[in-house]
Length: 480
Image: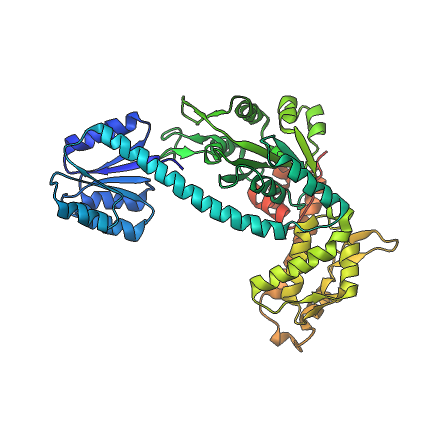
């Protein structure tokens, strides 16, 4: 990530003025401090990429301030300035962790060279860190995308075909099917490995904030914009941006996304300068974009620009043969997270889990396994541990929305629990709440025909809270 915010601390006003003017001309945000104490306050309050400090200042000296910086923000790069070209000062500054050392007077070209050097160093550090993290994530991802069904084998083949190119991919599928995992798999197997992977859920951010989140903003662009912020497209430069729930993006903002795809440049909110970006786009949605195009709810030109390679994830109910594999994976994962001995599922539990409809798909299965592991005292999970699921006669699976309080308490009293006094505090309340929340939210969404703003108003909760609950509980939102 290139440097953006710089602090200059010097007791000479003329030096502060010259450096500020030169750095601002290059497009940097610059804060000034007249002594070490003021500089320290700024460092505590703000985020800087580079600090240029005079070695002799009233209050804290540059070297003392350097020591404090190493304690407070070890990633902040510091350049020390001094009018005394002594070996002792230079050695002491570098020994304490300074990035570089300048002797006054100096040409402004020297500052330009240092800034460029800092940029290269930050870029290399960022790339190494990203590469390490992505290789680690890639290893984890290979173990996370579970499935050997024909549908999943087709997905694997498609990933292998499209990953090496920079073609735009549109991942479609119901909520909870693992669209972001697929997007990451495409990135990790592409030539952009080691570059940023930036994900943004378009449905999780209020409309009025989404544009500045995507494109960034300049200092002073609006109230509260106290410093320049890079948008997601700039953050993802040379890498991949994943635009989740693209169908929820406001119509007027869609034209700006189209422009980025066509022109490969962005303009920050409140700014006039266009910034070139080299970004691969992977978008995802659980909505029917073609139908939205017909209803004039989604731009046709943007749809065709995104839909170069369509990739459809089938719901879990259509690849039920993968459920036993997923159950084994989630049991091992959850037990490791909770630091409890690994549990297994009995054949009757597997039959129940395999026959259930899973409207919340893989995410709902994971949450169901987690709940059973937490509530059960036995190493073997049976069908009774999944009493929140049941199958109707005739084989059509449904969710049991009305598990009785007696049934919940009975689950808690099984095994080593012999009376109410020995029950762990809070568990029953949490389980009852989960059983009530899902049907209530589904009912209100049905009555409002999928209008989340109206549903949130009826429920008396924030819209973002409702969206979070919809995701957590694996609720499918059907819009008319």
